[in-house]
Length: 95
Length: 309
Image 1: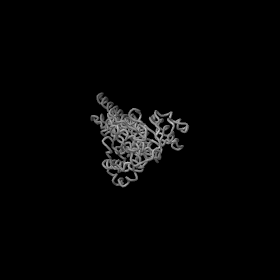
Image 2: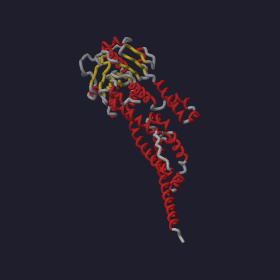
Image 3: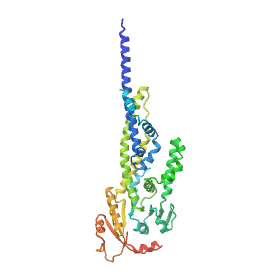
Image 4: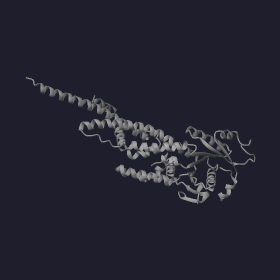
């Protein structure tokens, strides 16, 4: 005989897992968006990196000591620049 | 840094612009001497790398010299200021990016000094330092460098502001996204959200506030008087027209136009003065005609031969 309590608990577990999965997918997308924004920020401040004109060097100089994580993101992004397909695939992977 | 509160007790600033060789240093010196002779505490500072002020008053570059009770003279040492600024920045970087030492960035300071934008920024830093010092009730007379550099200096607060505002907007989006992620992750781990201040945002905000203050000072015609020196010569007139045009685009108005080395005996802008110069005169609040004076070593002798500047 099927125990209704057991069914309820299994259903609860399945729903929780589904909810967690949805949450993770949502955060993955936000995280991707965040990396893109950080990358864009670093690119704007240090635009000669990709051959664009520099903003006032005073702004770039003053921010440089605090931009470590953005610069790392910029370097990671640039190493993957030639492999856009896998980058896009990694985004859609979670969907 | 609190130059915002300085605005209320801001000194009176007089900025002398103009083409090279028209007599900016001479007229700014005479203006400072006239001002101090009325017992008005005055500081004359020259940002001109041609070192004319040093030659007139026999000053050593970078040193402050007390000319009399009411007048202080200083010739700005741009090279030293650039070096100090970049060296401070390099030390700050050393503390944060430990691997930076591997690149020996400090060996490239001389090269960094020549980077575009450094010259006008160190002039701006010196100007900010000046406002932060005890200059309440003082008159600061600034003899400016060649036109291109002077205009870049005058434009820098506005350009920086524009960039700061755009970058602040983008940074706010980054902070929002980080907060969302931290909130979700914190809840997942059952931890409370401990927000750390975003240093990039704080630095941008600080820079933005400074620049807004300087921009306000530049645009306040009671606090800051922009004066142009020119002569009745074609190239000088053309450069003056460009300076006025450029300042207008920054919403800065010229207070006084000094027509230097004026030789006519007739009072006012005589028929001998070119039409272009008469047109320029209509765009400024005051015109002062300064007669041609044979330069002597004694500035206090020259002061008797010029009108009230």
